[in-house]
Image (cartoon, rainbow, N blue to C red; front, side, top):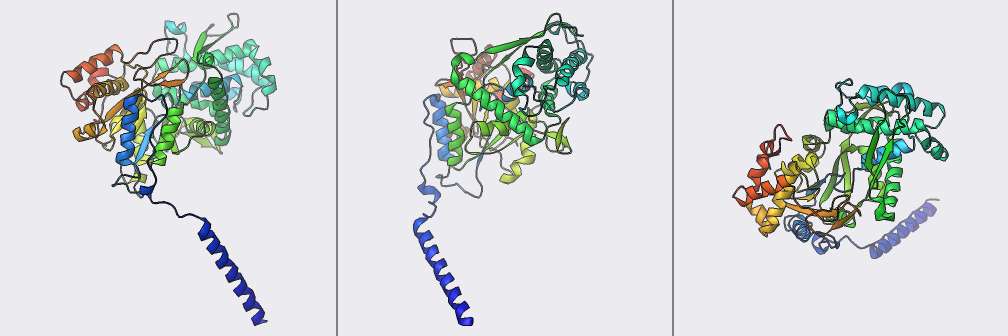
Length: 483
């Protein structure tokens, strides 16, 4: 019996050794970092200086750099809405949610959701809003929503999709849709983005994270297909509440953009940063589920994860309250603060080497970290602090300053990338063609003035550090390259 078992064991060992030898013979050992060629940007619509500077970044910090340490990978930080994407994906998701009545709360819960975080719901909103109030608009949406809800058309999933044409033809839906979307604008105009940005995510109340992410995935998939189908879909759309509908606030019309897109160039940038050993993170003022749904819909390659707006939950479902215990709001300086809390510890205190943004909300994280050496500003011809970065980019281009020159000076090398908002595509120049326009613009009048300051001897760092006086958008600024 012992001999029998010994023979079985020996045969098993022999088979294992044979399998191991075959596996060793057919499985190639991973190549060392230095033997993998650096992957450079090559898509056709990169602005030349943008491509050059980012490719230099790949050389300086990528896996083939002599100083590269795979145990201490460099990393990059990207805004999402209007940076990675064309248009705001959460605003587009909100339209999809309203059109499809994808909600998980009762009419009794709606007023609290619609007014959550608003400091004074009885504040007169001014003549642009017919001197009405958030309170009146919210109550009007509750009234219309109640009628839609009682007909059984409201659902967290797409189980009621067959009835969509019916409800969109009703005055109840037109009233609810118009004033719900109008509330977002009204709250933003009368308070600040610190109120309106988290507010838009409160309409996930009653959903699980999985339900909300699936809703986002469906929305992003639809608008991706819409944007790719025809340039004519890159336009504005509007809703109007019925003039004869009995309400507290009266009749309104609200306009918004439709379609979302991610350019081939941006997909390439995300992928090749990662391929060169540089980690990529997304920080967005949209809800985290909206961004994760986007990552699925567009099959982002190379992104580690996202730190974005996060909401509290009860019994595994979202409630209308921002989760400050998790991290600050991911807009403005909160983006820097959230990443200092959630991401920087992964990198032993090191900040991002590269930032990507488009607007005021990205200025802090793109300029404050001492490790940042380059940043891409998607040019939207702004007048805020983002335009300071664009003015610096144009000035640096004209001075023919490459990444190495900027690093020697201790400055961030900004680049400006243009796009055509009428097609959803990048264009190979610093300026952008705005929606409804035919010619590209580069700098706003204010930004032209800031560029003249640079030409007169002000340094880029001095210009950045004077942002509070230049625009007044920030009450205080800790300074460039200090975190």
